[in-house]
Length: 423
Image (tube, rainbow, N blue to C red; front, side, top):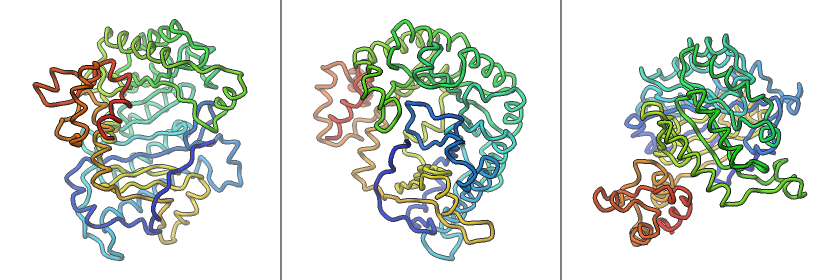
């Protein structure tokens, strides 16, 4: 089942934000995330806020056909909130956000929605804020939900890239992950995306129980043969409450160990690097700076984004909030057309200066450009020499550029590096 939402402070039913938070919104990049919570089946490893269509049923009050209307209703709320701040009934207090620079439609399986509905999302964002001339507009997709006609429709609407959930090229690994597509479907999906003129990103998972190093090499080679622009490779995390966690607990499958995952990460970096891909975040590689995922970089850089949909998270100017999780509750919070807009936020928090500084280290150190040493708390700076000596931080960059950049070994132990820099 989906993971629990974090605790937080009560969120106002109006969704209002402090005007002081919004005063500088026009100066920072602004993105939109749209969560589509539908899947055909629920993968055994997944703890995202997703629901298999049979789980919802007719009684849920939320169906695929009417879902985009709910999202557009929340975007209407976003327009109102971002213009007015916390002064009830007063518009124009805060400057308007700039045109949207990135859009990311994630899930779930966004391409279970008709292409015309996904196009309505982009048109709705453009109508409310405008899209920057070079806007990056991404949708995730399962390979077996991709069609040439659908991709052509998305490209015409303004989508620029598609992130395909390949995960593996090995049938027994896909079966363990409960993935529904056949390996051949990935190539067919890539061709459809390419023919529509959009960029291709492939998502891979390593460390699945039963996956050998040879299996992982096979997946990497298969991904590169499709000539994507971008590759994400994530270590499998077995989350509590998932079907895979229950299988592990019963002894039906065995977890891989840290050494296995480290070997697979090193292999990924070597194989991708030899093919011309450069890492720019610990789990992400691209063919050039131009093909990096700008939307995700906005997250890692502490940017501003509004997340629409059940369970979606948002961040504006140091205030973070998250929506109620179930689609039925989400629809009820928004209200019906003609009713006053209500916020679907479950709770929120206003980050302290210390929290923001810690997050700057947590996220910034994972990027290829690294982190200025000046951004690290004074106690953490005393750890830098030791991290260099242990081969976790690049010494020349720290000395000559005063920036902390992870070595390959440092990427393997990124969480350890962060703890030592902020504790």
